[in-house]
Structure formats: C-alpha cells, structure tokens
Amino acid sequence: MIGILTIKERFMPTKSSAPLIAANWKMYKTLPEALDFMEKVADQVEKSNTDIWLAVPFTLIRDVAEKAKGTRLKVGAQNMNDASQGAFTGEVSAEMLKDAGASFVVLGHSERRNYFHESNTFINRKVKRALAEGLDVILCIGESYQDHNEGMIEAKLSEQILESLDGVSPEQFEKIVIAYEPVWAIGTGKAASSEEVSDESTLIREIIAENWGKNVSESLKVLYGGSVDSDNAKDYLAKKNINGLLIGSASLNVESFVRIISET
Ligand code: PGA
Image (cartoon, rainbow, N blue to C red):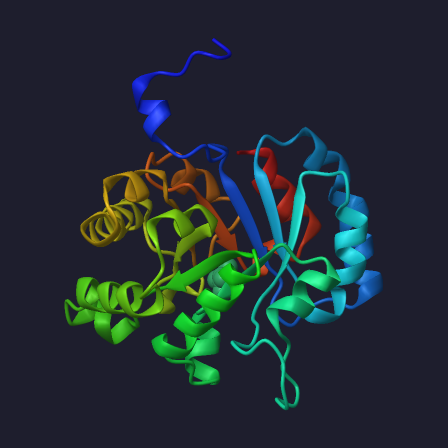
C-alpha cells in the first residue's frame, strides 16, 4: 500500500530491488557498432524489468549516454584514475567520466588487477574518488584459481573487501555494488555454480555485516560475473542472494544479451 511502510522497509535504504544486469564491454566496439547494438536491443530494454548498466570504453561514453537518455539504461566506465586531475598521461578522472555522461564506474576488475598491477590500496583511492564525485561503483572482487584450490577464498575476499573499501562509510554503500568474479571463471567458459556463488555471496555479506553493519549487508547488491551466458544466467538470478550479473563476452552479442535481459 502506498504511503504505509512496514517496519523492515522503514529501516532499509530505498534501493531498487530489480535485478541488475551489467554489461562489461571491455575493449570492444567502435561507435557505429555500439549504436547499432543500442538500436537492436532498444525494444527489449524497454520491456525489461531489470536495471541495465553498460560499462563501455571511454571513447563511447558520451554518444552511448546520449542514446540511452530517457531509457532504463545507465552508462558507465570500466576504469578511472584516483586523482582529480594532473600530469598523468593517458589517464581519465572521475570528473571527466561524469562530464562525458557516465553515472557509474567498474573498479578492481581482475584484468586491471592482473595486467595493470592494480593493488587494493590503489583501488581504494579510486573508490573514494568515484564516490566523492557522485558516481556509483561496481567493485569487483574474486579469488584466483590457486586461492580457490588452496582454501583461500574467504581470506582473499575478506582482504579485497576490507582494503578496497577502507574508510567507506555505511551511508556510502548506497552507491556501491559488489561483483563477485572468481578469476578462474572469467572468459574461460567455466562458470562457478549458482550454489557456489550463493555461498560466496553469503560470505561477502557476512564480511560487510561485521564491518559496516547488518542493514548495509542486507541491502547490498551482490552480482556474479564469470562466463555468464544466456543459458546459465537464470540459475544465478533464481538465487535470492544473487542480485544480478556482470557479463563480459555474452553482453557483446545482441542475441545473447537480449535473451539474458528477457529472462530476468
Ligand atoms: P566474461 O567476463 O563474462 O566474458 O567471463 C566477465 C567479466 O570480466 O566481467
């Protein structure tokens, strides 16, 4: 009933409860390709009940954001620098992202951690800068194959969360989404099972509850990413504590993307 909130609702931050489907386009698509994709998915996007976020290359942000105006699509970036400005050749600031039309940024992706040697401390500075500029953040965390086999999942996730989110206030969690992306599942075709992801989502919430409180943990959105495709997507979304997906290769193709958003 409109206007009357239950006790639980009164103490929970008002956050959309729709599943969140985030596309990570990585280093793919030229502008004509991106606009063609947008046209082809437009009808399905309109019919969908999900929140749909597109993390696109820097070069596409302005045009894709323009095209997404008035739709349920939100456009963001895949990385940024932690400084507000300066002599940092090749880098892009949070303010520049906002100026181009981005409303969120993906931080801590394992490809950034592995290929560009990004540490939790560096990611933490970026998270704080993004929040200070009013951007939403998708923070990626996940254990390596070795950590996975050596029983180090909890230790790794806990270290990544505590160090990457150090100094972030409970209130600021309203702008944070955590994507659990085990490194061994990304781009390998070996997706983690929905049971496994559900267990790790519970673990992530326990770590958050211990450090930022139960309310923050309960309203936090936890996504799964790693070889999600149009066949397995619904298994994850059927789990109560998996709030959405971060999708790489299957988000590049119109058919598979449309299938995924139409099933949610
Ligand atoms: P993938 O990538 O879906 O191609 O495995 C996911 C990601 O890197 O976010």
